Image 1 (cartoon, rainbow, N blue to C red):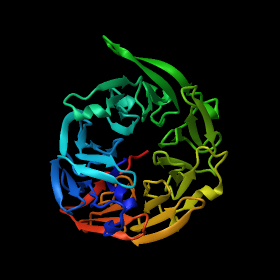
Image 2 (tube, one colour; image 1 turned 90 degrees about the vertical axis):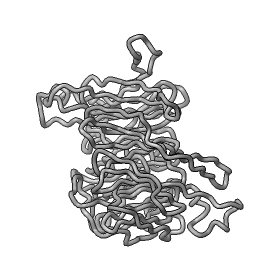
Image 3 (cartoon, helix red, strand yellow; image 1 turned 120 degrees about the vertical axis):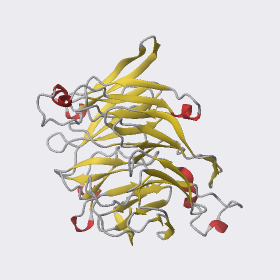
Length: 437
Protein backbone atom coordinates (compact mmCIF):
# COMPACT_ATOMS: atom_id res chain seq x y z
CA UNK A 1 0.00 0.00 0.00
CA UNK A 2 1.35 3.41 -0.88
CA UNK A 3 0.95 5.01 2.55
CA UNK A 4 3.12 8.01 1.85
CA UNK A 5 2.92 9.43 5.35
CA UNK A 6 6.49 8.25 5.98
CA UNK A 7 7.83 9.76 2.76
CA UNK A 8 9.28 12.55 4.85
CA UNK A 9 11.66 10.02 6.36
CA UNK A 10 13.46 9.95 3.01
CA UNK A 11 14.63 13.48 3.71
CA UNK A 12 14.23 13.71 7.49
CA UNK A 13 15.35 10.83 9.70
CA UNK A 14 14.12 10.67 13.26
CA UNK A 15 15.53 13.67 15.15
CA UNK A 16 17.05 15.18 11.96
CA UNK A 17 14.30 17.53 10.90
CA UNK A 18 16.49 20.58 11.44
CA UNK A 19 18.63 19.48 8.53
CA UNK A 20 15.71 19.53 6.11
CA UNK A 21 15.31 22.09 3.36
CA UNK A 22 11.91 23.17 4.72
CA UNK A 23 11.41 25.16 7.90
CA UNK A 24 8.63 23.25 9.64
CA UNK A 25 8.21 19.88 11.25
CA UNK A 26 6.76 17.20 9.03
CA UNK A 27 4.07 14.93 10.45
CA UNK A 28 4.96 11.25 10.64
CA UNK A 29 1.35 10.25 10.07
CA UNK A 30 -0.37 7.13 11.39
CA UNK A 31 0.10 3.36 11.47
CA UNK A 32 -2.80 0.86 11.49
CA UNK A 33 -2.38 -2.44 13.32
CA UNK A 34 -4.35 -5.45 14.58
CA UNK A 35 -4.15 -7.45 17.80
CA UNK A 36 -3.33 -11.17 17.92
CA UNK A 37 -5.86 -11.91 20.69
CA UNK A 38 -8.45 -9.14 20.71
CA UNK A 39 -10.92 -8.42 17.87
CA UNK A 40 -9.85 -4.84 17.36
CA UNK A 41 -8.04 -2.58 14.90
CA UNK A 42 -6.05 0.29 16.37
CA UNK A 43 -4.50 3.45 14.93
CA UNK A 44 -1.10 4.59 16.22
CA UNK A 45 -0.14 8.26 15.90
CA UNK A 46 3.54 8.26 14.94
CA UNK A 47 4.04 11.84 16.13
CA UNK A 48 2.74 11.37 19.68
CA UNK A 49 3.39 7.63 20.00
CA UNK A 50 -0.17 7.20 21.28
CA UNK A 51 -3.00 4.96 20.08
CA UNK A 52 -5.72 7.45 19.13
CA UNK A 53 -8.46 5.27 17.64
CA UNK A 54 -9.81 1.76 18.13
CA UNK A 55 -12.41 -0.12 16.08
CA UNK A 56 -14.09 -3.39 17.07
CA UNK A 57 -13.87 -6.31 14.64
CA UNK A 58 -15.65 -9.69 14.55
CA UNK A 59 -12.38 -11.61 14.93
CA UNK A 60 -8.87 -11.07 16.25
CA UNK A 61 -5.97 -10.16 13.97
CA UNK A 62 -7.79 -9.23 10.75
CA UNK A 63 -5.73 -8.83 7.60
CA UNK A 64 -5.07 -5.61 5.72
CA UNK A 65 -4.60 -4.55 2.12
CA UNK A 66 -3.51 -1.13 0.95
CA UNK A 67 -5.41 1.15 -1.39
CA UNK A 68 -3.72 3.33 -3.99
CA UNK A 69 -3.22 6.88 -2.77
CA UNK A 70 -2.54 5.87 0.81
CA UNK A 71 -5.64 7.18 2.54
CA UNK A 72 -7.74 4.00 2.71
CA UNK A 73 -7.04 0.53 4.10
CA UNK A 74 -9.09 -2.58 3.27
CA UNK A 75 -9.74 -4.70 6.36
CA UNK A 76 -10.25 -8.43 5.85
CA UNK A 77 -12.39 -9.01 8.92
CA UNK A 78 -12.31 -12.82 8.75
CA UNK A 79 -15.99 -13.29 9.60
CA UNK A 80 -18.17 -16.02 8.09
CA UNK A 81 -19.88 -13.56 5.75
CA UNK A 82 -16.57 -12.72 4.09
CA UNK A 83 -16.89 -9.06 5.03
CA UNK A 84 -14.41 -6.51 3.78
CA UNK A 85 -14.48 -3.11 5.50
CA UNK A 86 -12.61 0.08 4.59
CA UNK A 87 -10.80 2.32 7.06
CA UNK A 88 -10.26 5.98 6.22
CA UNK A 89 -6.95 6.89 7.88
CA UNK A 90 -7.76 10.58 7.53
CA UNK A 91 -4.36 11.36 6.04
CA UNK A 92 -4.16 14.01 3.34
CA UNK A 93 -0.94 14.74 1.46
CA UNK A 94 0.52 17.82 -0.20
CA UNK A 95 3.78 17.49 -2.12
CA UNK A 96 6.38 20.26 -1.99
CA UNK A 97 9.07 18.60 -4.07
CA UNK A 98 11.63 17.93 -1.35
CA UNK A 99 9.05 16.73 1.13
CA UNK A 100 5.40 15.81 1.59
CA UNK A 101 3.22 17.64 4.10
CA UNK A 102 0.63 15.51 5.83
CA UNK A 103 -2.61 16.79 7.30
CA UNK A 104 -4.47 14.62 9.75
CA UNK A 105 -8.22 14.57 9.39
CA UNK A 106 -10.61 12.36 11.33
CA UNK A 107 -10.10 8.60 11.22
CA UNK A 108 -13.29 6.71 10.44
CA UNK A 109 -14.48 3.23 9.61
CA UNK A 110 -16.68 3.58 6.52
CA UNK A 111 -20.24 2.27 6.61
CA UNK A 112 -19.53 0.76 3.20
CA UNK A 113 -18.89 -3.00 3.39
CA UNK A 114 -18.74 -5.88 0.89
CA UNK A 115 -19.53 -9.54 1.58
CA UNK A 116 -19.09 -12.79 -0.30
CA UNK A 117 -17.59 -16.26 -0.35
CA UNK A 118 -13.86 -16.39 0.44
CA UNK A 119 -12.42 -12.89 -0.10
CA UNK A 120 -8.91 -13.11 -1.54
CA UNK A 121 -6.79 -10.82 -3.70
CA UNK A 122 -7.17 -7.04 -3.36
CA UNK A 123 -5.62 -4.83 -6.05
CA UNK A 124 -5.83 -1.07 -6.53
CA UNK A 125 -4.48 0.95 -9.47
CA UNK A 126 -5.51 3.71 -11.83
CA UNK A 127 -8.05 5.11 -9.37
CA UNK A 128 -9.90 1.81 -8.98
CA UNK A 129 -10.05 -0.90 -6.35
CA UNK A 130 -10.76 -4.58 -7.08
CA UNK A 131 -11.96 -6.93 -4.33
CA UNK A 132 -11.90 -10.54 -5.52
CA UNK A 133 -14.08 -13.28 -4.02
CA UNK A 134 -12.95 -16.80 -4.93
CA UNK A 135 -16.24 -18.55 -4.20
CA UNK A 136 -16.65 -21.93 -2.50
CA UNK A 137 -14.99 -25.08 -3.75
CA UNK A 138 -17.35 -26.54 -6.40
CA UNK A 139 -18.09 -29.65 -4.34
CA UNK A 140 -19.07 -27.57 -1.30
CA UNK A 141 -22.16 -26.12 -2.95
CA UNK A 142 -23.22 -23.13 -4.99
CA UNK A 143 -21.58 -19.75 -4.53
CA UNK A 144 -21.08 -16.45 -6.33
CA UNK A 145 -17.41 -15.92 -7.19
CA UNK A 146 -16.95 -12.33 -8.25
CA UNK A 147 -14.85 -9.19 -8.39
CA UNK A 148 -16.29 -6.10 -6.75
CA UNK A 149 -14.94 -3.00 -8.50
CA UNK A 150 -14.89 0.34 -6.68
CA UNK A 151 -14.05 3.89 -7.77
CA UNK A 152 -11.56 4.98 -5.11
CA UNK A 153 -12.44 8.68 -5.16
CA UNK A 154 -16.08 7.77 -4.53
CA UNK A 155 -15.09 6.38 -1.10
CA UNK A 156 -15.02 9.99 0.10
CA UNK A 157 -18.77 10.25 -0.51
CA UNK A 158 -21.79 8.62 1.06
CA UNK A 159 -22.49 6.25 -1.82
CA UNK A 160 -19.37 4.64 -3.36
CA UNK A 161 -19.55 3.82 -7.07
CA UNK A 162 -19.44 0.04 -7.36
CA UNK A 163 -19.73 -2.51 -10.18
CA UNK A 164 -19.55 -6.32 -10.03
CA UNK A 165 -17.98 -8.78 -12.44
CA UNK A 166 -19.40 -12.27 -12.01
CA UNK A 167 -16.87 -15.06 -12.45
CA UNK A 168 -18.19 -17.97 -14.54
CA UNK A 169 -16.87 -20.41 -11.91
CA UNK A 170 -14.98 -20.49 -8.60
CA UNK A 171 -11.28 -19.67 -8.78
CA UNK A 172 -8.46 -18.27 -6.65
CA UNK A 173 -8.48 -15.31 -8.97
CA UNK A 174 -7.46 -11.72 -9.45
CA UNK A 175 -8.75 -8.55 -11.12
CA UNK A 176 -6.28 -5.82 -12.09
CA UNK A 177 -7.38 -2.30 -13.10
CA UNK A 178 -5.58 -1.33 -16.32
CA UNK A 179 -6.89 2.20 -16.76
CA UNK A 180 -9.80 3.54 -18.74
CA UNK A 181 -12.47 0.86 -18.59
CA UNK A 182 -10.15 -2.11 -19.04
CA UNK A 183 -9.48 -4.86 -16.50
CA UNK A 184 -7.24 -7.90 -16.52
CA UNK A 185 -9.19 -10.76 -14.93
CA UNK A 186 -8.13 -14.37 -14.42
CA UNK A 187 -9.88 -17.30 -16.10
CA UNK A 188 -11.03 -20.25 -13.93
CA UNK A 189 -9.20 -23.55 -14.16
CA UNK A 190 -11.77 -25.68 -16.04
CA UNK A 191 -10.88 -28.93 -14.26
CA UNK A 192 -11.27 -27.33 -10.84
CA UNK A 193 -14.46 -25.54 -11.90
CA UNK A 194 -16.17 -28.81 -12.85
CA UNK A 195 -15.52 -30.17 -9.36
CA UNK A 196 -14.89 -33.69 -10.61
CA UNK A 197 -11.27 -33.83 -9.47
CA UNK A 198 -10.86 -32.58 -5.93
CA UNK A 199 -7.07 -32.61 -6.29
CA UNK A 200 -7.27 -29.93 -8.98
CA UNK A 201 -5.88 -26.52 -8.07
CA UNK A 202 -8.11 -23.47 -7.68
CA UNK A 203 -5.33 -21.36 -9.18
CA UNK A 204 -6.03 -20.02 -12.68
CA UNK A 205 -3.91 -20.81 -15.73
CA UNK A 206 -4.55 -17.67 -17.76
CA UNK A 207 -6.15 -14.25 -18.12
CA UNK A 208 -8.46 -12.16 -20.23
CA UNK A 209 -8.43 -8.42 -20.72
CA UNK A 210 -11.99 -7.16 -20.55
CA UNK A 211 -13.48 -3.79 -21.31
CA UNK A 212 -16.29 -2.60 -19.10
CA UNK A 213 -19.26 -1.46 -21.18
CA UNK A 214 -21.77 1.28 -20.55
CA UNK A 215 -24.32 0.92 -17.79
CA UNK A 216 -27.30 -1.08 -19.01
CA UNK A 217 -30.64 -1.87 -17.45
CA UNK A 218 -29.44 -5.27 -16.31
CA UNK A 219 -25.99 -4.14 -15.17
CA UNK A 220 -22.81 -3.74 -17.19
CA UNK A 221 -21.63 -5.43 -20.36
CA UNK A 222 -18.09 -6.77 -20.83
CA UNK A 223 -16.11 -7.10 -24.06
CA UNK A 224 -13.05 -9.33 -24.45
CA UNK A 225 -10.12 -7.25 -25.70
CA UNK A 226 -7.38 -9.91 -25.49
CA UNK A 227 -6.91 -13.43 -24.17
CA UNK A 228 -3.85 -15.07 -22.62
CA UNK A 229 -5.34 -18.41 -21.70
CA UNK A 230 -3.76 -20.92 -24.13
CA UNK A 231 -1.95 -23.66 -22.22
CA UNK A 232 -0.42 -24.76 -25.51
CA UNK A 233 1.69 -21.59 -25.51
CA UNK A 234 4.09 -20.68 -22.73
CA UNK A 235 3.91 -17.01 -23.71
CA UNK A 236 0.11 -16.94 -23.57
CA UNK A 237 -0.65 -18.70 -20.29
CA UNK A 238 0.34 -18.75 -16.63
CA UNK A 239 -0.15 -22.22 -15.20
CA UNK A 240 -1.01 -22.24 -11.47
CA UNK A 241 -0.81 -18.46 -11.22
CA UNK A 242 0.03 -16.88 -7.87
CA UNK A 243 1.78 -13.56 -7.29
CA UNK A 244 1.32 -10.26 -9.13
CA UNK A 245 3.11 -6.91 -9.34
CA UNK A 246 3.62 -4.09 -11.85
CA UNK A 247 6.81 -2.25 -12.77
CA UNK A 248 6.76 0.68 -15.20
CA UNK A 249 3.63 -0.50 -16.98
CA UNK A 250 4.75 -4.12 -17.23
CA UNK A 251 2.46 -6.52 -15.41
CA UNK A 252 4.23 -9.56 -14.00
CA UNK A 253 2.54 -12.78 -12.84
CA UNK A 254 4.09 -15.72 -11.02
CA UNK A 255 3.50 -18.99 -12.88
CA UNK A 256 4.42 -22.63 -12.28
CA UNK A 257 7.94 -24.02 -12.47
CA UNK A 258 9.04 -26.66 -14.98
CA UNK A 259 8.77 -26.79 -18.76
CA UNK A 260 7.37 -23.49 -19.99
CA UNK A 261 7.45 -22.07 -16.47
CA UNK A 262 8.52 -18.64 -15.35
CA UNK A 263 6.89 -15.26 -14.90
CA UNK A 264 4.44 -13.97 -17.48
CA UNK A 265 5.01 -10.35 -18.51
CA UNK A 266 2.09 -8.45 -20.06
CA UNK A 267 2.54 -4.97 -21.54
CA UNK A 268 1.49 -2.65 -24.32
CA UNK A 269 2.71 0.54 -25.92
CA UNK A 270 0.35 3.45 -25.49
CA UNK A 271 -3.15 2.34 -26.41
CA UNK A 272 -1.98 -0.40 -28.73
CA UNK A 273 -2.42 -4.16 -28.49
CA UNK A 274 -1.42 -6.14 -25.43
CA UNK A 275 1.62 -8.39 -25.73
CA UNK A 276 2.88 -11.23 -23.55
CA UNK A 277 6.19 -13.02 -23.07
CA UNK A 278 7.55 -15.51 -20.56
CA UNK A 279 10.71 -14.96 -18.53
CA UNK A 280 11.96 -18.41 -17.51
CA UNK A 281 13.06 -19.00 -13.93
CA UNK A 282 16.82 -19.44 -13.37
CA UNK A 283 16.27 -22.98 -12.06
CA UNK A 284 13.51 -25.44 -11.03
CA UNK A 285 11.93 -23.18 -8.40
CA UNK A 286 9.10 -20.62 -8.68
CA UNK A 287 7.72 -17.47 -7.06
CA UNK A 288 4.37 -17.20 -5.28
CA UNK A 289 4.37 -13.59 -4.02
CA UNK A 290 5.65 -10.48 -5.80
CA UNK A 291 6.42 -6.96 -4.54
CA UNK A 292 7.00 -3.75 -6.49
CA UNK A 293 6.98 0.02 -6.10
CA UNK A 294 5.26 2.30 -8.57
CA UNK A 295 7.59 3.57 -11.28
CA UNK A 296 10.60 1.56 -10.14
CA UNK A 297 12.58 -0.96 -12.18
CA UNK A 298 12.70 -4.15 -10.13
CA UNK A 299 10.14 -6.58 -8.78
CA UNK A 300 11.11 -9.00 -6.01
CA UNK A 301 9.46 -12.34 -5.27
CA UNK A 302 9.88 -15.16 -2.78
CA UNK A 303 11.52 -18.10 -4.52
CA UNK A 304 11.52 -21.80 -3.80
CA UNK A 305 9.99 -25.21 -4.26
CA UNK A 306 6.70 -26.19 -2.61
CA UNK A 307 8.19 -25.28 0.75
CA UNK A 308 9.84 -23.46 2.15
CA UNK A 309 10.37 -20.54 -0.21
CA UNK A 310 13.91 -20.00 1.05
CA UNK A 311 15.24 -17.41 -1.39
CA UNK A 312 14.34 -14.08 -2.97
CA UNK A 313 14.30 -13.46 -6.71
CA UNK A 314 14.99 -10.09 -8.34
CA UNK A 315 13.04 -9.59 -11.57
CA UNK A 316 13.66 -6.93 -14.20
CA UNK A 317 10.60 -7.28 -16.48
CA UNK A 318 12.52 -5.63 -19.34
CA UNK A 319 15.42 -8.10 -19.15
CA UNK A 320 16.05 -10.77 -21.74
CA UNK A 321 16.39 -13.46 -19.08
CA UNK A 322 16.71 -14.19 -15.36
CA UNK A 323 20.01 -15.54 -14.02
CA UNK A 324 21.53 -17.06 -10.92
CA UNK A 325 22.77 -13.61 -9.89
CA UNK A 326 19.13 -12.57 -9.44
CA UNK A 327 18.69 -15.12 -6.63
CA UNK A 328 19.37 -14.23 -2.99
CA UNK A 329 19.41 -17.28 -0.66
CA UNK A 330 17.89 -16.59 2.75
CA UNK A 331 20.52 -17.16 5.49
CA UNK A 332 20.56 -20.65 7.02
CA UNK A 333 17.98 -21.89 4.53
CA UNK A 334 15.13 -20.20 6.38
CA UNK A 335 11.81 -19.32 4.81
CA UNK A 336 11.78 -15.88 3.17
CA UNK A 337 8.73 -15.21 5.36
CA UNK A 338 7.99 -11.45 5.10
CA UNK A 339 9.68 -9.00 2.73
CA UNK A 340 8.92 -5.52 1.42
CA UNK A 341 10.57 -3.02 -0.91
CA UNK A 342 11.40 0.48 0.22
CA UNK A 343 9.51 3.42 -1.23
CA UNK A 344 12.19 4.10 -3.85
CA UNK A 345 12.49 0.45 -4.84
CA UNK A 346 16.25 0.37 -4.21
CA UNK A 347 16.32 -1.48 -0.89
CA UNK A 348 14.44 -4.40 0.59
CA UNK A 349 13.61 -5.38 4.16
CA UNK A 350 13.30 -9.08 5.03
CA UNK A 351 11.94 -10.39 8.35
CA UNK A 352 12.85 -14.04 8.88
CA UNK A 353 11.80 -16.69 11.47
CA UNK A 354 14.99 -16.15 13.51
CA UNK A 355 13.60 -12.71 14.40
CA UNK A 356 16.14 -10.79 12.37
CA UNK A 357 15.33 -7.90 10.06
CA UNK A 358 17.86 -7.69 7.25
CA UNK A 359 18.17 -4.75 4.88
CA UNK A 360 19.43 -5.44 1.37
CA UNK A 361 20.51 -3.38 -1.59
CA UNK A 362 18.89 -4.87 -4.69
CA UNK A 363 21.13 -3.67 -7.55
CA UNK A 364 23.56 -3.77 -9.21
CA UNK A 365 23.95 -6.89 -7.08
CA UNK A 366 22.30 -8.24 -3.95
CA UNK A 367 24.12 -6.88 -0.89
CA UNK A 368 23.27 -7.10 2.81
CA UNK A 369 23.58 -3.62 4.33
CA UNK A 370 22.37 -4.18 7.90
CA UNK A 371 20.86 -6.75 10.24
CA UNK A 372 18.79 -6.08 13.37
CA UNK A 373 17.61 -8.34 16.20
CA UNK A 374 14.07 -7.09 15.70
CA UNK A 375 11.89 -9.63 17.53
CA UNK A 376 12.16 -13.03 19.25
CA UNK A 377 12.27 -16.05 16.93
CA UNK A 378 8.82 -17.03 15.66
CA UNK A 379 6.86 -19.48 13.53
CA UNK A 380 5.99 -17.95 10.17
CA UNK A 381 4.14 -20.94 8.75
CA UNK A 382 0.64 -20.20 7.49
CA UNK A 383 -1.87 -20.79 10.28
CA UNK A 384 0.71 -20.67 13.08
CA UNK A 385 -1.02 -20.61 16.47
CA UNK A 386 1.67 -18.55 18.14
CA UNK A 387 1.70 -14.76 17.56
CA UNK A 388 3.37 -13.81 14.29
CA UNK A 389 5.20 -10.48 13.97
CA UNK A 390 4.39 -8.39 10.92
CA UNK A 391 6.51 -6.23 8.61
CA UNK A 392 5.33 -3.09 6.82
CA UNK A 393 7.56 -0.78 4.81
CA UNK A 394 6.29 2.76 4.36
CA UNK A 395 8.52 5.17 2.48
CA UNK A 396 12.02 4.69 3.95
CA UNK A 397 10.80 3.17 7.22
CA UNK A 398 10.35 -0.50 8.04
CA UNK A 399 7.90 -1.13 10.89
CA UNK A 400 7.94 -4.44 12.77
CA UNK A 401 5.32 -5.55 15.30
CA UNK A 402 6.46 -7.51 18.34
CA UNK A 403 3.37 -9.24 19.78
CA UNK A 404 5.38 -11.05 22.45
CA UNK A 405 6.55 -7.78 24.03
CA UNK A 406 3.71 -5.44 23.01
CA UNK A 407 5.83 -3.09 20.94
CA UNK A 408 6.12 -1.64 17.43
CA UNK A 409 9.61 -0.81 16.20
CA UNK A 410 10.88 1.25 13.28
CA UNK A 411 14.05 0.79 11.22
CA UNK A 412 15.29 3.34 8.67
CA UNK A 413 16.20 1.89 5.29
CA UNK A 414 18.27 4.96 4.36
CA UNK A 415 20.32 5.56 7.52
CA UNK A 416 20.29 1.89 8.57
CA UNK A 417 19.48 2.89 12.15
CA UNK A 418 16.63 2.01 14.48
CA UNK A 419 13.98 4.69 14.93
CA UNK A 420 10.84 4.48 17.04
CA UNK A 421 10.34 1.76 19.66
CA UNK A 422 6.81 2.21 20.95
CA UNK A 423 4.92 0.23 23.60
CA UNK A 424 1.29 -0.44 22.66
CA UNK A 425 -1.58 -2.22 24.36
CA UNK A 426 -2.14 -5.91 23.77
CA UNK A 427 -0.28 -8.08 21.26
CA UNK A 428 0.25 -6.04 18.07
CA UNK A 429 0.34 -8.35 15.06
CA UNK A 430 -0.73 -7.54 11.48
CA UNK A 431 0.33 -4.09 10.25
CA UNK A 432 -1.18 -2.14 7.38
CA UNK A 433 1.59 -1.45 4.91
CA UNK A 434 2.43 -2.43 1.35
CA UNK A 435 -0.18 -4.36 -0.60
CA UNK A 436 0.52 -8.10 -1.24
CA UNK A 437 0.91 -9.63 -4.56
